[in-house]
Image (cartoon, rainbow, N blue to C red; front, side, top):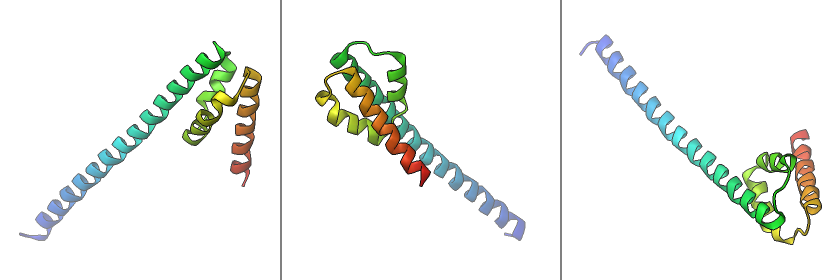
Length: 103
């Protein structure tokens, strides 16, 4: 085996390892995105059951929430009495995110 053959074999092995790593990372990212989207759908259904149809601006705010924020909303959703309470909660969540991004 000469140097060029060894290099070609190393290069092919390295490329295959890179592809496999990319597939694994892609699956993980897809899994995380799927969980986030599923959580959003459930929250939207719960919000609609709790308050009836809500306006597009509130729906858009909920769509922008992180997984952690969606979990927090799940914890407090049934303690909120009105859509105004929901708006206030969403405003508070937005303020928290803005503070974190300003750091």
